[in-house]
Length: 57
Image (cartoon, rainbow, N blue to C red):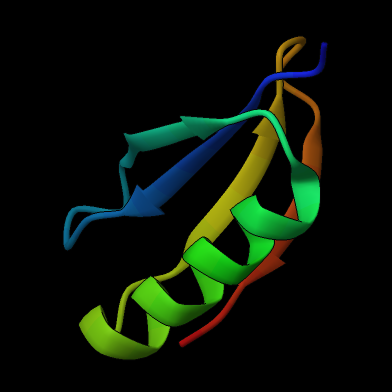
């Protein structure tokens, strides 16, 4: 099973862990809705640390 980590970028440009999900489409929906609510960049990263997607607010 694939783990997808949702991370957000704080005001100091550091990436912080937000949540881990097992379904990529659900992870993207969560990151997209939270990015629009908070105004922060979010990214989806797999278990190996590879970037899957970057979500702008």
